[in-house]
Length: 232
Image (cartoon, rainbow, N blue to C red; front, side, top):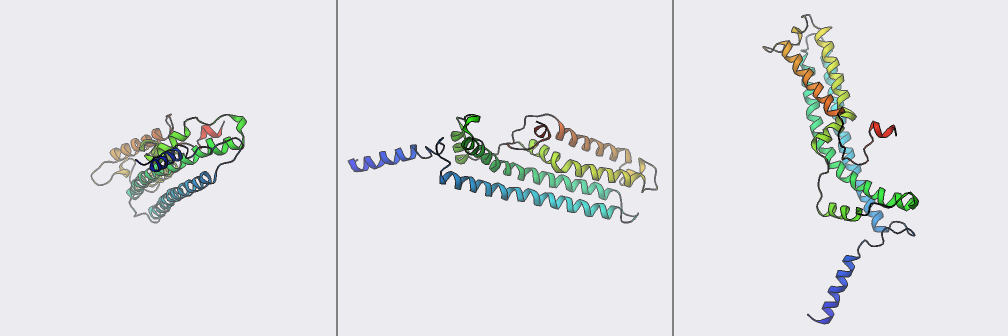
């Protein structure tokens, strides 16, 4: 290899090795590249946040329409409310999947906030994570979803869907008791399925949602505001 070509290769290798070096210095703020990177991650996080909000808005709108229809006249069957609960479950699944994508971008934003901006604003509070550059670099090379589907469902149940399920369940109980001429639990029957079976299934599914939402677990989502965090 000619000497000039070898020098060009060595210079290129040195540049790549030092790429990013000096982005975090005590005497200087984040570089322009870091600022643009942070702005881009904020934009992506905002886009996924809006997708979550659209799913929630559709779920609330449909449940409001179903509740209005269910109590509009006596002849409306009570299982319309159970259909609404099933629709909520579909929206919950969709929103949990979107939440996992949203968490990918939010985790990058939090990593930059914790290790660049927080340290740059007040270096006396402690040193940043010594491995944050490597972990962020690996995340850019090989993006991966960081939370499980179960955790995502638990998050959305706590924030939005458990109260919605509770409202639908309360409306269903009122519909099969106060607004039904048949005795309870026969008033909960659907076709040939007895009311006892329907009531048992509804109770089991609702209790399963409550347990999934409130049981203690190791949360992997970064920056999520939970009730125990707010009390600190």
